[in-house]
Length: 287
Image 1 (cartoon, rainbow, N blue to C red):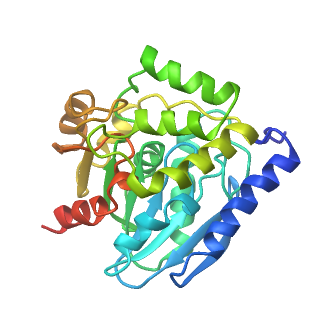
Image 2: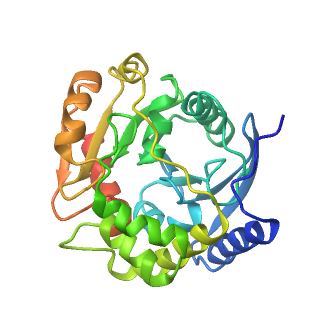
């Protein structure tokens, strides 16, 4: 039995996919797109650059087309592979995994890595993407993890203020309501600067034409502990309202043997707020 699509209509799906293709088509960095066959349906990846391979897994409601500035910051020194998660808005299959969703995503990561790189990769996951990375099985294909504002280690903090900006955005999406949500998700001292307009356009499109998913529950501890012998960097914005340092620190130390890097001035959208963040975190892994 086929799972229902995340999109509210075929026309809405075309709008979302056209936005992604248009933005990727205007990206001046040389790149190529591939469609992979996986157990979760077609998966679109965007590949650019040369060097050590980094696989980027985006957060809820984000995709490769929203990560171009993030990728550009990595490209001088890395080959960057950006994967759209199946069941999230973007260019991959529009059906979400059913039961044991994170386990299905974890298996999917191995399928993607096996098709895109003959060399070991560092998997960089943001928010939902970090939970997906943690759900994968350690092995020689994955040389390390960089987890930014990671879901999967603790429950997301949900507040009345969050509901106050999320519910209007879902009920009647506008650019201003999308910006209000993005500002809540960002660090108050920095914000999104030049990325806000693009992300607001995207988030408005997503709210109008797709059904958003909730933050995943924490992964079972044995699943997370499997990574304890693998190089892992865990970071979150000092102003992250969903996964603040105090919220994820205990699990990161106990299950992964990693201290959390609390990045001053950043919120939940750290890679978008400061594209220099990921190169700095990858540098910590090499140190």
